[in-house]
Length: 121
Length: 188
Image (cartoon, rainbow over all chains, first blue to last red; front, top):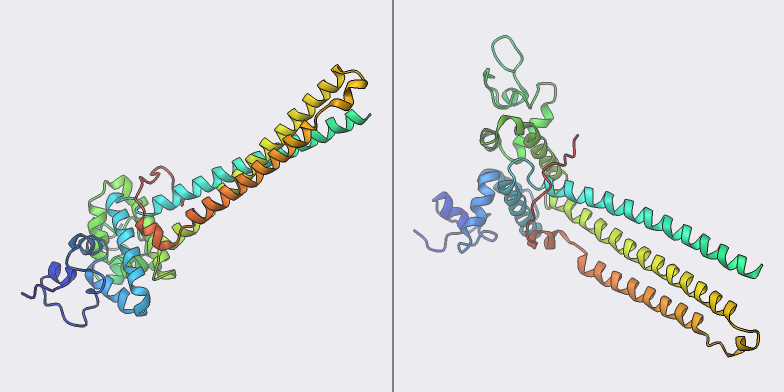
């Protein structure tokens, strides 16, 4: 077998052609990357997705697929949607705290100007 | 549920097969919403979805399906980044809000310091005679200047933090994964 097969073709036990759609993004030294993506999406779906993209965007697409697949393996119920939920909660809490702080600023400014006004009286 | 006489679920309709009584998809892909299964099948594939659902306890499968549909829709909208694009956007929003919060907290500290300084000056004036007033140092002005300096420093630090925290999808994908908040649900 060709030792220079990409991780995908090694995993799928097939010959790695010169124009293999996976080989630029799944080097043979990182077999877990393809295993993870294949487990969640399937090689056929990944191949279809990559072929529908311009070449210059495929590397980023592969990385995002790996990220989402890893999230899904670690959290089979929510996947990376759990992270989105967490961030939305954090945003809401920070907004509430910001609104409270801005209200405190307004109150403090009013108090301060009232004190200054009473000094001049 | 599928079975003789009843309408096949959306999955079995799309896959053109008989919808069994114990079809794993039927509770979650009703026949009146064919798009839901179509998009999940397009991104993940029916057999992968079936495997994933079968590995989960029944009471968690509805949430799992909803999250898969969400991810599949995100991937259809953004074929390069999918959900990672949304995560990146939200992280940037968090950074910006945290910066605004830091500025607001610095401002309130400033106001409190000004207030205390004013009170102190007021008490000192009351304790002194008329003649001693001319000898007072301009301590209240110095405190206000120091307060403004710390305000600017806080703002600059926050801006620096914002730049280093500015999350691109690429940096999201390199970061360590943290445990997501499982209890929160986007669709409840």
